[in-house]
Length: 371
Ligand SMILES: Cc1ncc(C[n+]2csc(CCOP(=O)(O)OP(=O)(O)O)c2C)c(N)n1
Image 1 (cartoon, rainbow, N blue to C red):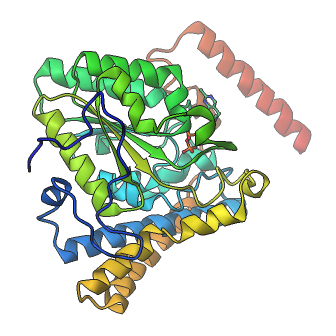
Image 2 (cartoon, helix red, strand yellow):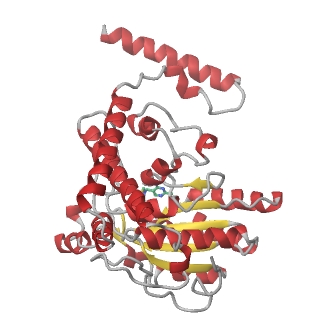
Image 3 (cartoon, protein in one colour):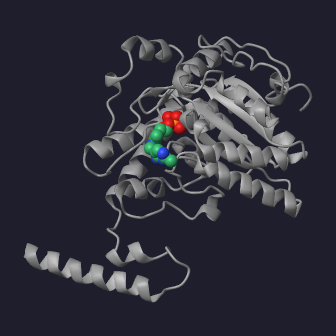
C-alpha cells in the first residue's frame, strides 16, 4: 500500500469527501484509496455489511431497552455505522482506541462484551469494561478529553519504540474544545503515531456544524501541520481505506493523521433529545438517501451477489446479537452500594472511609423509612 500523495498535504484546501462506493452502489475510483482496499474481496465487504447490520441492531435494541426502562439513557449511532465499522476493522488488536459515548459499533468490532457496553447506561457501574482486555478505553463523556489520552498514549508508543497506533474518535462539536486543539498540537509536535477520527455527523446536540466551523473540519488540521483527509463517512470502504493509510503512516513513523468522516446522525443526540425541535424533515430525508447499509447492498448486487443471501445471514447474526444483549442487560445483577467507592482512589483513606460510613448510615435511614 502506497503512502505517497495520499492525504491532503498541509497548506492546501480540504478536498471533496473521498468516496469509493456512491450512494447508489456505484464503485468510484480513487488512487491510492483503491490500492488500500485492493485485497478486500466481495465476501469481506459482505462481512463489513454484517458488522453494520449488527451495529444497527445493537442500537435499535438498546433504544428499545431504554424506552422499556431498562437503561437510563442511550446515545444512538444510527447513520454512522460505516464510519465506525470501516475504521475499526482497519485496526490491529494491539492498537489502542479512545472514544466518546457514541462509538458502540467500534466497541462491537473491538470485541467488547455486549452487556458491558450497556452497564454504564444502566447505571450499574461507573465504567463499562476492562480497557486492557480489548485495548479500548471506556466511553469518555467529557467532550474531546479522549483526544488528549490518545495523544499521550501515542507519545508513549513512540518513546517505547513500538509500532502500534492510538486512535481517537470524536464528533464535530469536539473540535472546538481546547482539549482537542492541545491534543492535535502535541501529536503534531511529537509526530506521534496517532489517528484522529472525527465523525462529522453535522450536529453537536442542537448546534449545526456550520456554526462553529467556517471551514471544512479537516482543514483545521492544517494549522497544526497535520496530514488530513475528508472522506464520505457513509462509505464503509472509504473509511477502511483512509484508516488503513493513516495507520500505515503512523506505524512508519510519519506522524499523525486527521480524518474527517462526513456523515449524519439520523436519530436523536440521546434518547433524552428531540431533534424535530432543531432540524428539518427535509434534511433527514436527504441523508436517508445516503444510508450506509443500503449502498453496500446495492454495491454487492452489482458484484453479482444475491442480496437475499447475505442480508439474511447478516440479519440472523444481528438477531442473535440483539437477543444476547437483552438477556445480558435484563439478567444483570444490581451492584452493591459500596462499589461506588471502589476504584476511585488507588488506596483507601480516612476521608473516603468517612464518606462510605456516612452513605451507609444514610441508606439505613432511607430504607428504614421505606419499610
Ligand atoms: C466538556 C463538555 N462540555 C459540554 C458537554 C455537554 N455535551 C454533551 S454531548 C455534547 C455535544 C457533542 O457533539 P459532538 O462533539 O459533535 O459529538 P456527537 O454527540 O454529535 O457525537 C455536549 C456539548 C460535555 N459532555 N462535556
